[in-house]
Image 1 (cartoon, rainbow, N blue to C red):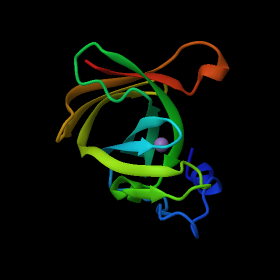
Image 2: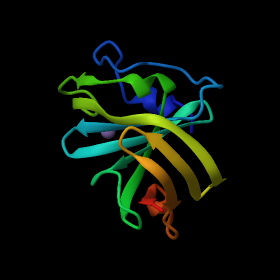
Image 3: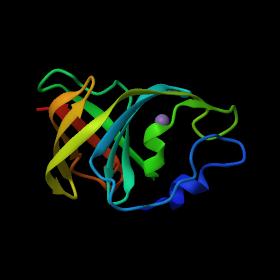
Image 4: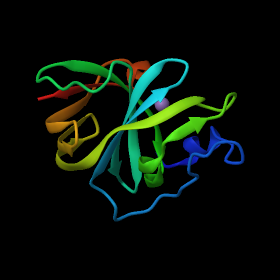
Length: 149
Ligand code: MN
C-alpha cells in the first residue's frame, strides 16, 4: 500500500503527526493508539514491510481468548507514527486526541494475504493473536477480525 494515502490525507503544516517515510529494518514493533476522533476507536498497528500496517478497531483489542472484534484496515502509516501522541487539530483528518494505549514487540508466526498470526509482547497485550480478513465481496476487503487466540 505504501504511504501515498497517508500523505494525501494530511497537511503536515497543520498536524503534528509525522510525515515519515518508508524504511526497512525496524520491524517487530506494534502499537495501539486510543484515538478520540469523531468516534472513539483504537488504532492497531504492526511494523511490517517498512511501514505500520494499520487497522481501526472500534471496540478495542480483545484481551480475552476467543473474543473477536471488527478491525477495519486503514492506510499504512510511517514507522515514526508508533511514537505519536497528541492532538490532531480541528478540521484535519482524524481530528482529536491520540494516546498510546499499548506498545511493545511482536513475533510474526504466520502471514498470508488474508491472515496474520502473531504473538504480542506489550505492557497490556500479551499472547497469541490473529487478524483474519472477511471473506466475500470486494467492498468488505477492508474488514478484518482481530482475535485473541
Ligand atoms: Mn484513528
